[in-house]
Each structure stands twice: as C-alpha cells, then as structure tokens.
Image (cartoon, rainbow, N blue to C red; front, side, top):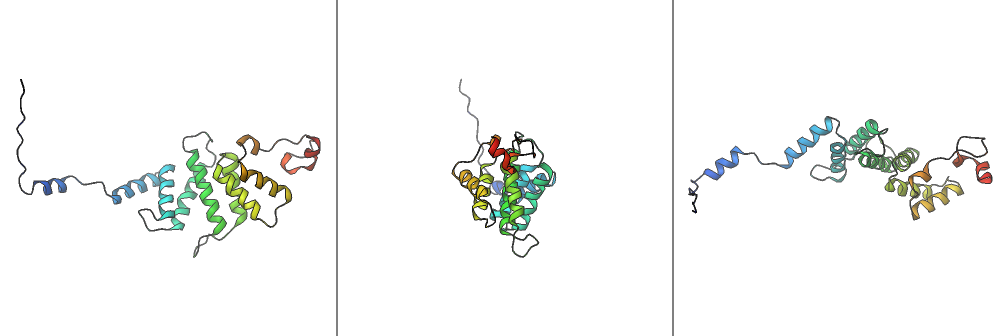
Length: 191
C-alpha cells in the first residue's frame, strides 16, 4: 500500500518569514565564535585568528593583533608536551613570532630583533621538531654575518634535510669539561 503525503504549496511571503526566523551562519558569527573560544584560552582558535589577521582573511589585515594571538599561545603552551594534540599549533605560533621578530612590525613596538627570532626558531625546532623552524633557523644562520664556520655548516646541513629531533638535543660532553657537546671543542676531539 503506497500512501502519498500531501504537499501544501507555500504561501506568499512564507520563505521570507522563515529566513527571518532562522538566522544564517554568517562570517560575523563565525568570527565571534572564534573570538569567544580564543578568549577562553583555546589555542587552535587563537592560532586561527592569528592566521586570519596575519593574512587579512575575512578580517582587516593586522600584524599586531596576529602577533598578540601567537604570543598568547606561546606564553600559555610553551611547556606542553611535543606529543600533545595542540603541539603543532604551538610550534607554528613560535615560528610566526620568530618571523615577526626577524622583520619587525612597522609602526609598532615590535622591532626587528634577529636574536629573539633565533630564540623562537630554535625553540620550535628543538623542542617541537618543527621543520619550518629548522628551515628558518638555517636561513638565519646563513644570513648572519657574525655566525661561525660551524654555525654555517650546520645551517647548510639543516637546510638540505632537517635533522631529526633527537639530533638537535645537546649531547653530554665526553671530556666532562662542560655540559654540552655543541659548545665544546674537546668533545669533537674525544668523540
């Protein structure tokens, strides 16, 4: 037995009334939701807003606001485990901050500071094993006029193929004269 369901034709103006009754999801409401989550400390929302402001994606481009969102992530999650679900977002925030420190932000208090940029890249590269940070760090070493020959060799090696996370960690000095092999000439002779 096949029962047909009667369809009542729409009355004039019914569609307009329905649209008014059910609000659509607009970019403004999505932005508000992201801002709410970011203010609540959600790192992925903070990262997304940072990227939006950095790129001018759906909002007016504002590097200073992007910098603030990335800074929130770095300040709150720097010590998170590299295997934490948000670790990639945290590492990317450090890379973004490093790039801002490298170039500065015009008309703001954020001036070019290559040493601070190096710190950001080094942390993301060594603690989180972030390949973009390793690449940016290698480029920074190659451009740095004051870097030693060993730094330049390390940069060339790092830009060709990023080192594994374990190889970035300092090794104890075999000569026991200092704490790390990366700063000790004796360890090169001993090992």
